[in-house]
Each structure stands twice: as C-alpha cells, then as structure tokens.
View 1 (cartoon, rainbow, N blue to C red):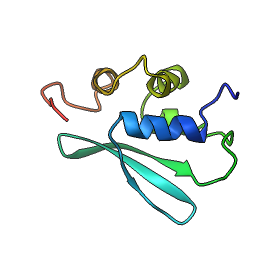
View 2 (cartoon, rainbow, N blue to C red):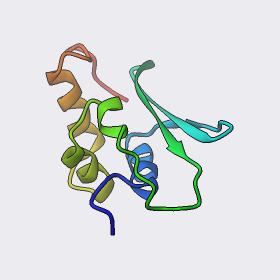
View 3 (spheres, rainbow, N blue to C red):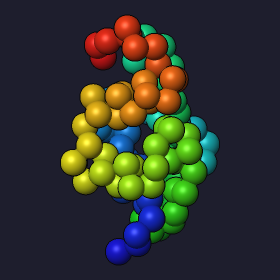
View 4 (tube, rainbow, N blue to C red):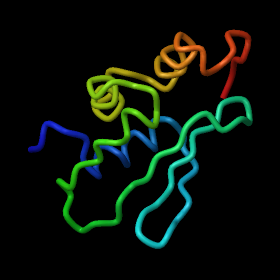
Length: 98
C-alpha cells in the first residue's frame, strides 16, 4: 500500500470532515464547512487507479500528511482537525459547532 494520500484516503477524509462532495468533470470537489462557512476544499480524482497520489490534500485542508492519514485511519476526529485549523488562525476561537 502507498504511504501517501490515496483516493481511498481522500474519500475517508471527506467523510470524516462531513464534506459536501460536488461532482465535477474529472474529479469531485469536497467542501468542508464550519458554522456555515467554507473552511477548506480539495479535489478527489476519479481515476480508477486507487493508488494515484493526492499529494495536494494536506495543503488544502491545512494539515500535515500524518494528520491526513490519521483522519483517514481514525485517530484524528473532525473536532481534532477543527482545533488544528483554529491553532493556525484559520477559524476564530469563538466559532463552535458543526
């Protein structure tokens, strides 16, 4: 198995972060909202090859590769990711809730 972010990982991350996935021509766009505001978005390629790398996902959701893999593999929750994004100043501290 690839040690990078795969299509399967990207799909799991989108589900974990309650992303709204919008279909596109060549990829789906996963949009992540917090308190009704768009916080981040990333593309999920439609390639039939499951190991096609999605290297751009960590940068687009303001996380490290390890944090992304933790989202996909369960140790990191949506709330944990929200805290990471808050620490980076991308979500105001007083913004709480889904």
